[in-house]
Length: 59
View 1 (cartoon, rainbow, N blue to C red):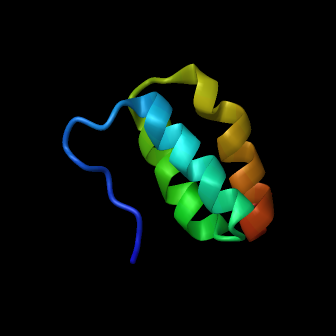
View 2 (cartoon, rainbow, N blue to C red):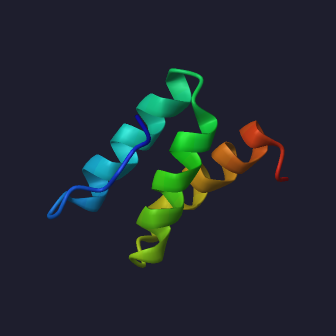
């Protein structure tokens, strides 16, 4: 099941879930979550976003 952002999910939990996807070797799912978190203006997502992009070969 692809990740989705439930209504009201805090951004920090979304980032935590994205890192969990990275640890489960699901970088594409993690990338979607990191992109969604970054779209909220959260600057703390930049490292995770870069890691996920590298994992899927976008760097």
